[in-house]
Length: 100
Image (cartoon, rainbow, N blue to C red; front, side, top):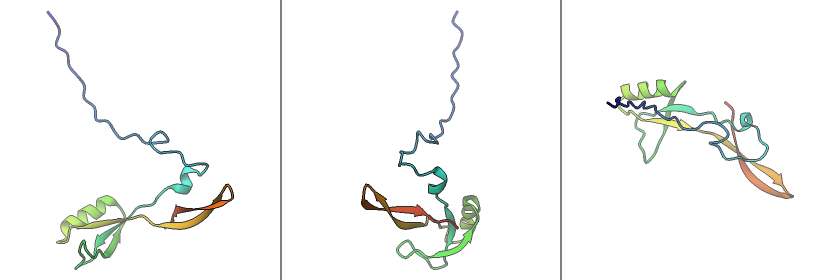
């Protein structure tokens, strides 16, 4: 008699690390790390004219407060600064994440 076969199912998480990110030269990971900020939608805001309300500390807190409000919308914000970088004698515009 054959023994029953059982399969173990595991969830695969997205790849994190250097293999998942394209290489971009000599910049360190710490220099290019983006900081995400979370905001609730301002009262009276719409998708056509989004307006930021109060900032919250984390995504989880933003989700809870948005769910409790009647608007139930959150915005995430990534801020960058445009800078010129000289490569091979010609300038190239690059974006650098802003620190808080």
